[in-house]
Image 1 (spheres, helix red, strand yellow):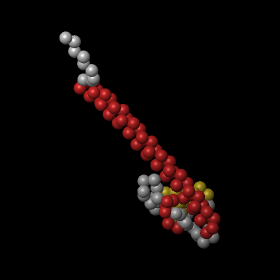
Image 2 (tube, helix red, strand yellow):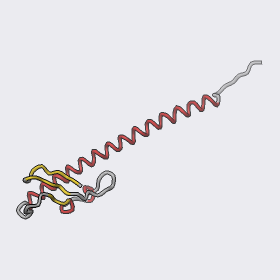
Image 3 (cartoon, rainbow, N blue to C red):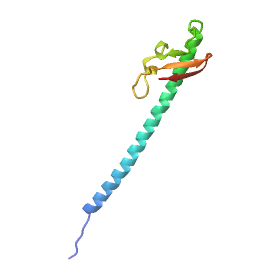
Image 4 (cartoon, helix red, strand yellow):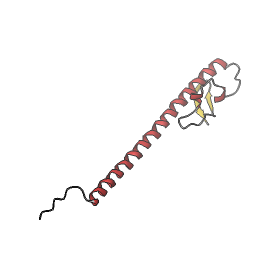
Length: 107
C-alpha cells in the first residue's frame, strides 16, 4: 500500500510562522525608526519657522525691545499647529539673537 501524504507537517508550518514573525519584527522596528526620524525633521522645520517669526517680530519691534536679546515664543503670532511639535508638546522657549542676527531657538 502506498500512502499519499499531501500537505505540510506541523514543523514546516511552525518554521514558516517563525520566519514571518522575524520579518515582521524587523519591518516594524525599521518603520518605527523612520517615523521618529521624520518627527525630528518636522521639529527642525518648525523651529526654523519659529525663528523666522522671531526675526519678523524683531524687525517690527526693535525700537521697543531695549536691551533684551531674547523673544519669548508666546509673544510671536503663531498658530496652534506651529506652536506644537511633532510629539504633541508645545514650544515654550525663546528665540535669542545677537545684534538682530543669528536667531536661535532654545528651551
